[in-house]
Structures are given as structure tokens and as C-alpha cells.
Image 1: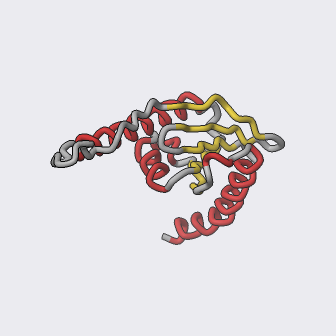
Image 2 (image 1 turned 90 degrees about the vertical axis):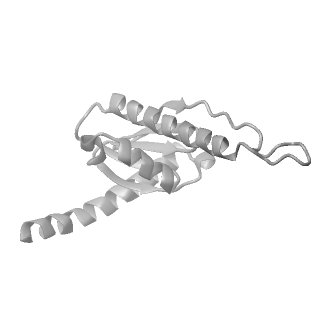
Image 3 (image 1 turned 45 degrees about the vertical axis):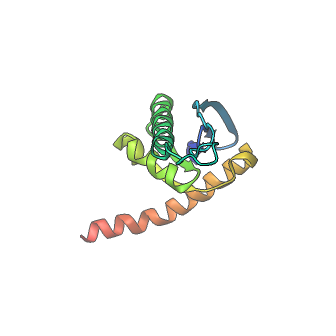
Amino acid sequence: MSHILAVVLDRAHARFFDVGPTATVELPCLRSPATRGGKFHSDRADAPGRGERAYHGRLREEERRHIAGVAARLVALDRDPAWELVLIGPEHLTRALRRVLPRALDGRCIGTAHLDFKRLTPAIVQREARRLQADWTQRLPAATAIRSTS
């Protein structure tokens, strides 16, 4: 069993886990500053509610910066080319992260999952990472057989 680097994402946080053969260790996490201000609608009774575009633009920019920060941390944590990568979080965040990862690191991603960020423990992360690794190794022989026949 090889080492797995598991990343657990939510809107403003990222937790990193080193899932080893016998133990799982949580590495320092990343917290991105997120400014969730008030609603984009005005508090005044007859106001038109301007500012919706700027509100959503700010949220998109915060998400883009957070994903870029997580990708930079993954590149910094990439110690061993034999490590595999698991991404855990909402689907739109894991897809966005895979789009910005370097090709070599994205190629080592063995799967994604969606778990509750607040209730995660190292044991739950280890169980999910090992499940994804088992699924990956079962699909691996079929993928190499398809490539060899083409």
C-alpha cells in the first residue's frame, strides 16, 4: 500500500491528510479569507437591489483564489512521485481543482468523493482513501488492456 495525499475541500478551507500504510496524519490546513457580506439586495424598502453582479463576481473570485492556493499547497507538498492523490469535497470544487493542477499531479489523482467537511476524522479520510485506491487498482488492469488493444 502506497502513501496517499488526501485533500478535503470546502468553500474557504482545505484540510490535507497523509494516509500512510498504517496511520493517517493531518497536515497543516489552509484557510482562505472569505468575505461573505450581506445580501446583494438593498435593505431599503423601495430600492432596486443593484449590485447582484458584483456580489456573485466577488464570490467567483474568492473561489478562484482559494482553488489556486490549494493547488500551490499541493505542489509544495508533492514530495514523492509515488504518492497518489485523493480529492474530497463538493463536485464543483474538486473539478475546479483538477483543472488547475499541474498535469503530473493531476495524473496521480485516483478519485474524488463527497463527504461532510465538518464531521471528517482521520479515520474516515483513511477509509475513503483506501476505498478509492481499491477501486482504482481494480479499474487499472482494464484500462491498460484497452490501451494495448488500440
